[in-house]
Figure 1 (cartoon, rainbow, N blue to C red):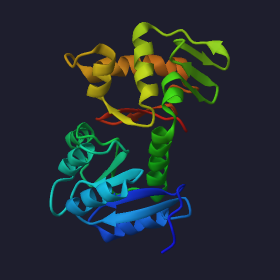
Figure 2 (figure 1 turned 45 degrees about the vertical axis):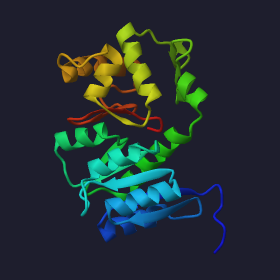
Figure 3 (figure 1 turned 120 degrees about the vertical axis):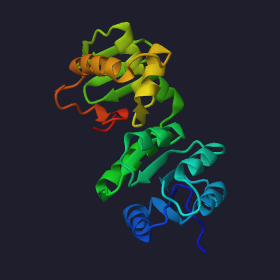
Figure 4 (figure 1 turned 60 degrees about the vertical axis):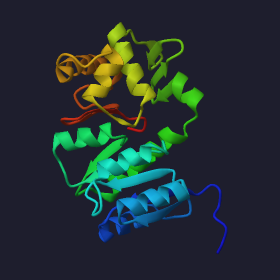
Length: 235
């Protein structure tokens, strides 16, 4: 057997549907990534521990246990990105999966291109160096310097209120990750009392007007209906 190259990233797919595993294999198994498969939660946990993948794609409807429990067990020993796949479209299911430790949630059916984009975004986030991710981010003509508390767009200073700044900082430090309303409410306001969705709707709208090219059709701050928001670094 040929020795695996050190620059090849491993993606673990835990799904009992052969067609989904085949789709993922065709989408990601190439010279830069390899795909390993598991049809049950137990098999997936074993592979995750042994193979130490760079990213995990996890189905919620597994034959031996609930995918959310598998997600919690994975989080006990790995911090790599987890993208949940599920035919469950309910808001409560999405929130429960994210609260269990998932980084993103894709509902079935989905397109190969969407899944590829979500995987790329999570891998960028995971392998971005911590100092760079924590201090400065540039997307097009927008620059955010967290250390200097400075935001510029097309070279011009963007004035943010303290709350808008706290919200943007939460987005930037968790870029390309779906954040629930509760996640953001705690990060910005420090508690979960009150109407999180209403508070966020107001402040996200204000922030979009200041940093988006077109606030009506935002490319940076994406809405995940019924769940929360995601800050895109490659819109």
